[in-house]
Image 1 (tube, helix red, strand yellow):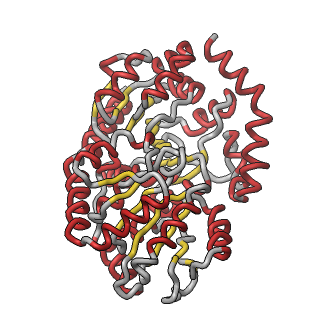
Image 2 (cartoon, one colour):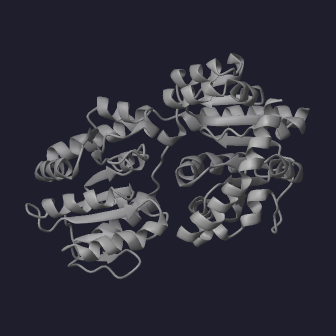
Image 3 (cartoon, one colour):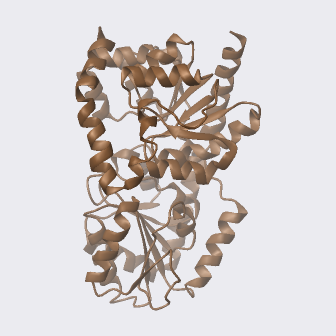
Length: 424
């Protein structure tokens, strides 16, 4: 009955869901209209059968999962790997990071027949979902075909837990269809158990987002770019959003009063924001250029209008600001900046990374600011104090190193599930 009510509710909402994706999101970013039938489980390209399916909702999950997926492929070279996502930017990131080693498609919307069509077409060996991608129909159809459902890098905030409690019958239904769950920490694990997940199915592995390894290529590329900027003081504002772009630009204008050669690299989170940020720059007194064009040495701001380069941009910076945090967006992942030993600045809204920021704050590797004035003041302080800058950067790297190891634990869990599936 629970699944029936859920499926009927989604069916009633389907015109609005499809209209939103195709018309509203498609109007903002035309890529949402491409491969649209995949969202209904209809595929024009060949999708491998009996694949191991990794689902990464969008860019953040793709970046976190890439090292894990690459290692899984190395350990299981004969397995077909299908990586699914929900967004066009996630799709591009998968193609950039994993190339032709995997097949890519959209995970269908969790309509009853769409998810059934997907599961019966692919007949996955394993279904591996990152974080809190919990889809009742998908899980139920997977269970019917004896496909193990694995949730990895799982997190569940207290706010989300209370939300799932309000739909307790559906939450219990979801939990009943999960085979294994690898959580960030004990608190997350206990929340899933309180929703109805059997304790023996839960394992605490830590967050795979800590398992960042910089390659020689990463470091060389960042150093080469930094030389382009003639050793100017550089700060990167990564993954910024509307309502935040303006505050970043205001902070940089203030900073230029004390550090006139400072360069801001601003990297909007979504491609549809590139032109909007350029419009803001054009209206401001700031000289700017775009990353996709030739760099103008006179520029005070570089607009990063390319995809997949944020890690490298952090690598050529002195300070990192992590976006989505001066507005109530919940923040983004600070660990790529930590990997390059950068002091990390953030706004107050970091609930999406409540398992990471407290560790950084404890080591004084990250600092909160509330507005553009505070941001400019702290940037000025750090640029004037190289020893403090380096100390905070070293602490950020130490925090990263201290919490690594989740990928190995998660891979062991998946290998065990794969072995069990092949024996059955």
